[in-house]
Length: 252
Ligand code: PEP
Image (cartoon, rainbow, N blue to C red; front, side, top):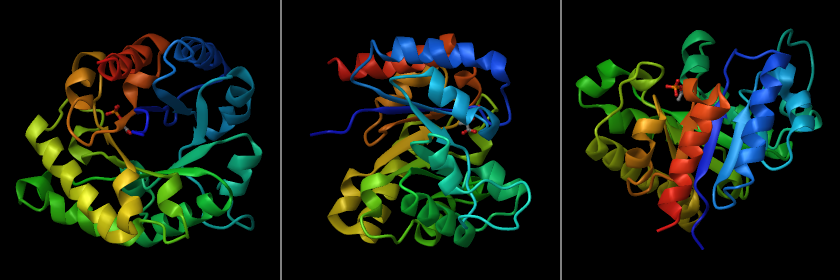
């Protein structure tokens, strides 16, 4: 049976308690779209409260440390995310790779820590504009997958990959349909090479300037199993329009 489309909101470093109303509104409406899996990743400070405020949607972290506990000031472990009620965590977001100098090795260790804490994982990969212009996009993403996919037994069952071209994040620019299709096909081949037949079922999300007006086109591309949404996930109205687009595609 095909997996449900998965639409995940990444709130990044946005949100105080006032945003709980958006979480509640997303949750209430998501209940009307049972054929779409919906999640939001609020900042860690809101995780526990969002968990309490919602009933239907998944709740996740935006990152985790690779160790369970210890002298790592300011960090949050996967065990702590799980304890706060998280279902999943994002790892390897390009903003973490860039601003926190996270390597594939770090990302792999984080993904493995998350899986061992009982969380599902959304692993982000994507090329910079210079890498795409140089014709290296698929090779860059393949290397990221080889270096950062978790090696834990059964990892593929709890893993989603988010293809997020760095140059498309928060810019309003999106790759062509043909480029997204080619990249998702290449990612699928890598996942099968890494995980064997289990790699065929890993959901591959697209992320980067997904909005209500381009969601239907992007979600209809072969092997696009959902979307990781930044800016447009910050209000229930704009996020639910994307959830609705996913639901309409599934209704055919
Ligand atoms: C993201 O950062 O994961 C993202 C997809 O952001 P945006 O939708 O704002 O481009």
